[in-house]
Length: 101
Image (cartoon, rainbow, N blue to C red):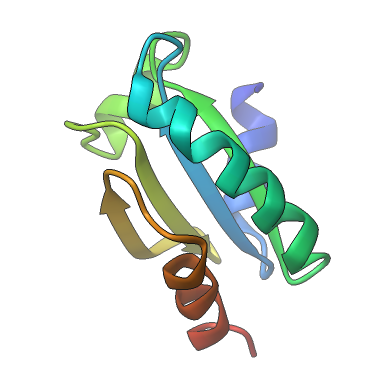
């Protein structure tokens, strides 16, 4: 993802869930189908993006990604939730629901 495009997404009013991952990461691969289903479920409520930390080390450093997968929810450019490791779809949906206006 291009840097300006990513910044534009996370600065918007719409919730943005970002999955920070790496290609060789087994837990990251396990999260993929969860996020695909989640993306279909949330519709226009939130945008779901994937950020490969090997290809985007700037953002890995900027958001202090020390374990993968790490999921971060942004709203208006601010981090409103983050969690590392395997996260259930229910937990992510709950967090998104808490921040929908």
